[in-house]
Length: 195
Image (cartoon, rainbow, N blue to C red; front, top):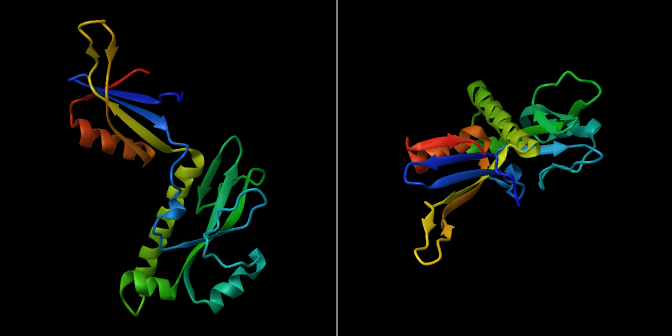
């Protein structure tokens, strides 16, 4: 049985229990603007449409294929994983994993414009960083499953208590996502209880 990480109780007795979601869809399966290309001997997080090239060929490939925004992607691998567009500053347990990038053609299609400005490129870079932040949550286990059960009901005949499942949702990214769900489902009527 999974271990509950957090529990919220509503005044009517309904309970929302938060678990780590180890079986959720990864963020690279979403509709992303960027393409992730990684080179690692143990992990392959490259997108299906990423070019089949070696790391040393990336710069030439990017120029030839009109990549207009490209950010380095770093991996920290020590007692867990973390991913970032900025260096972790640890030469032993981290290093550059690859790149996340967007081509001019993809940017034009996504932004519905022919001419991509420097402001557009800044916006695209922020979007790419957001995609890597989602990957960081995914690889570090910061994704949750929430199960909501109704109030405990006791059988008048046998005295057995039980509660019925009311709702469940998986693939909730980060604590902000958990709290947004709790606010929506429990409004202000939720109190966190000790697990």
